[in-house]
Amino acid sequence: MKNMPRSTKPAIVIGAGAAGIIAAWKAASDGAQVILLEKTKRIGTKILISGGGKCNITHDGPLEEVLRAFRPHEARFIRPACYRFRPQEIVEMLTSRGLDVYTRPDGRIFPVHQTAKDVVAILRDYLRDVNVDVRFETPVLNLETDNGLITKVVTANEDFEPGAVVLSVGGSSYPNSGTTGDGWPWAESLGHTVVPILAALAPITLRDARPELAGVALRDCILRGRQSKEFVRWRGDLLFTHRGVSGPTCLGISREVSEVMVSGVANLEVDVVPDRSFELLTEEFLKWSKANPKKRVETWVESYVPKSYANELMRSTEISSDQVATNFAIKLRNRLMNALKGLDLGPVQEVVLDKGEVVAGGISLDEVDPKTMQSHRCSNLFLCGEVLDIAGPVGGYNLQAAFATGFVAGEMAANLVLDQ
Ligand SMILES: Cc1cc2nc3c(=O)[nH]c(=O)nc-3n(C[C@H](O)[C@H](O)[C@H](O)COP(=O)(O)OP(=O)(O)OC[C@H]3O[C@@H](n4cnc5c(N)ncnc54)[C@H](O)[C@@H]3O)c2cc1C
Image (tube, rainbow, N blue to C red; front, top):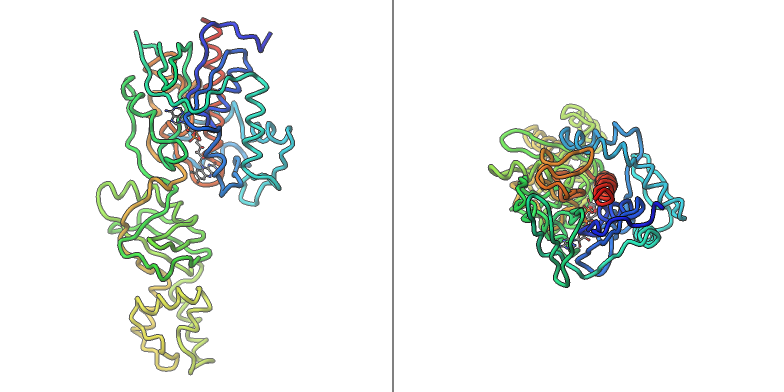
C-alpha cells in the first residue's frame, strides 16, 4: 500500500534541483501524491553543470569530517539530515542503477565514465518509478496563506491547493539556469528572516586586473585575503582570468572576501612558494647565483613559476628583466623574495555572485526545524537545499546538503499530507 496516495491534497515540491528531486521522490515513495513544479524545461539543471559537467556527487569519509567542512552553525543544522541520508545513500541510489563512481584521494566522489547527464537521467527514472507528476515550464509565482498555512501555490499555468509545500528553488547564482532567488521574498512574506545573500565559491574580479596573465595557472600556492590584516587564506591552484582570478583557491576564499567587502575593501595576495621561508628562498637564490653568476635573475624565478608570472613579478617589483645574478643588490633581492612570498594583486573589484557555485545567505536556519525541515513560521512548509542559509566548500558538500535536506523535507511533507 505504500505507493497508494491516501490524501486528496498533494505535496507540492517547488523546484526540481538536487533537493527538490530527492524530496519529491521520497515523498512519493512514502505514498504521497506529489506534484513537482519546475520553472525550466528540465530537472537538475545545476547538477548538469556541476563539477564542470562531471558532477562531484558527494563527499566520502566519516560523516563528522564531512560536516566539519561546513561552518559550525550550518553543520549543526544539517547533521540530523545527513545522518538520515548519508553520502553513501545517494551513491547507492545511483550505483544500483548502473552508475560507476570513484572516490578521489581528497574524498570527492565522481562518476567514472559517465557524466552529470547520467546522474540526472537516473534521478529522472526514480521520479518516474514513483509517479511523481513533474510539471515543466511551470514557474511558481506566489504562495497564498490563510491562518499560518499555505493554501494555494500560484503558477503561471494553474493554481494548486497543497497539503504540504516543499520549497526547493535554490539560490540565485547562475540565474540562467532558473535560479533567480524566487524563494526568499515568499519566505519573508511568511515571516522568515533571509540572511543577506552574498557570493560564495565564485570568481573574483580585481580593480587592477592583469589581462596579460589571463589563462596562467599557479599550482599549489596560497591565496590570502587582507583587510589591514590577513582574514582568510586557501592553499591550492589559482587561475588568472581577464578580469581577475578564479580556480580552487579563489573559490575557497570568495565567501570570506564577500563578507569583508560589505564593510570595506579587501586586497588579495599570492604566495607562490608556500613551503619555503623568505630565508630558505634567499639561501636557494644565493646558491644558484654562485653557480650561475651571468644568468638573468628572471631565469631563476622561472624555476618556481610559469614564465609569464615570472615576468609579471619582475615588472611589478620594478626589477629589470635583464638583471643578472652577479650584481643583484640586496635591497632588490629582498623585494623579489617578498613578492614571491606575497605578491599584492591589489584591491578586489567584485566577487561575482552570478558565477558562483552557490550563494551564502538565505532563509535563516534558526527558523527551521533541523530534524524535519519544517518551517517554524508556517506548519505545512518544508525548506531544503540552497534556499536555506547553507554554503559548503567545493567538494560535493553542497549537493550532499541539498540531497540530505531534500530527503528529510520530502519524508516529512509526506507524513503531513498522509495524516490529513
Ligand atoms: C557551476 C556549478 C558547479 C557546481 N558544482 C558542484 C559540484 O560538483 N558538487 C556539489 O556538491 N555542488 C556543486 N554545485 C552546487 C550545487 O549545484 C548546488 O548547491 C545545488 O544544486 C543546490 O541544489 P538545490 O536543489 O537547492 O537548488 P538548484 O539545484 O539550484 O535547483 C533549484 C530549482 O528550482 C527551480 N526554480 C527556481 N525558481 C522557481 C520557481 N519560481 N518555480 C519553479 N521552479 C523554480 C530552478 O529552475 C531549479 O531547477 C555547483 C554549482 C554550480 C553553479
